[in-house]
Image 1 (cartoon, helix red, strand yellow):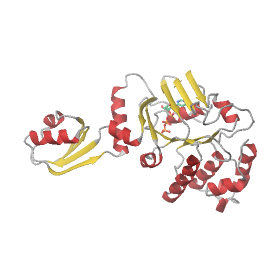
Image 2 (spheres, protein in one colour):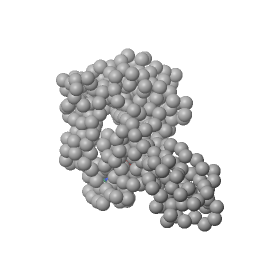
Image 3 (cartoon, protein in one colour):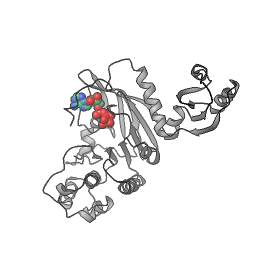
Image 4 (spheres, helix red, strand yellow):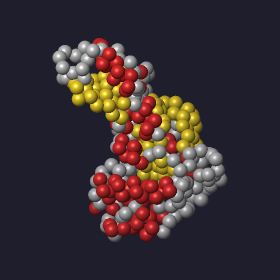
Amino acid sequence: MTATATTNGATGRTADSGVPVVAFTDVNKSYGAVHAVAGLSLELHPGETVALLGPNGAGKSTALDLLLGLKNADRGSVRVFGATPAQAIAAGQVGAMLQSGGLMEEVTVRELVGLACDLHPKAYPVDQVLAAAGITDFASRLVDKLSGGQEQRVRFALATAGANDLIVLDEPTVGMDVGARQAFWATMRGQVDQGRTVLFATHYLEEADAVADRVLVMNRGRLIADGTAAEIKARAGARRITFDLEGPIDEAALRALPHLVGLEVTGPTVRIRSDDADATTHAVYGLGLYPRNLEVAGLGLEQAFLALTEGAGASAGEQTAAGTGDDKAGKR
Ligand SMILES: Nc1ncnc2c1ncn2[C@@H]1O[C@H](COP(=O)(O)OP(=O)(O)OP(=O)(O)O)[C@@H](O)[C@H]1O
């Protein structure tokens, strides 16, 4: 479904009025004993492209549902352009592309996108929306005859049928092939260049790294990191050191190395994450070891993400979303 507007209600705010685009203040949402969103506070600002990362069940979709007014918080406040989500959506300020929700059947792509344009208070011409989403070629096809990737592009067209100030995308490129993904993000960049704020949840970390200028990492309902991809990588331990050792390996001695963030030993190969690679490498030699095939490299976002979420998982003391085996049947 899309969250395009159906009335002309106005929030009285614009993207550049100094009011945050989105403000979550100590937001909580539970399903029984599962804290899907736990004490979430954050602000988004105009023109930001923000990736929301987190393992399965981290609370990303729930946070987006709260932002779109599809669910109500148990506690805390969610404001969009200083108003309630419903008011911002009614004012045509928010476009959304969600993971699920069937598209209307027995209509053509053009008819469906045309309907979204008719409903939007600040709509673009249908042909422009079709072209921007790259779906002109199959605009006369019935919606129920589309491939998964084509359906995703139609959802994107519905989310961008009018001049929204905020675009919310839940795993937007799932089912798209590499070419379609690249085209999708090229289109998104066009939206951002026009001053829009984009928030997208994704499991494709390379996408977050390439596209987002800010990355939020959620785990067990909580925000555990917020920064640029480079800052997130640095926070997780800046460098990866890999080398081989001959003979038996004394893991306890390696574990005591200075600035060590993570250690993995597989056969003769030692992989270390360190927040000061120079000091750690120096200390490896100080142990009297002779590392072979030594490599020092920066962490990718994927490794940083794993390091952060593993660390946060270990310290979570209460029953939260992950690992409870809870029932997702009621989800959208
Ligand atoms: N309607 C619901 N009823 C019960 N539990 C739910 C419901 N919706 C979500 N949950 C639970 O809340 C937690 C957070 O789910 P959510 O879908 O927000 O996570 P997510 O980060 O989007 O996960 P994924 O990456 O798998 O889509 C999970 O444990 C999930 O099972």
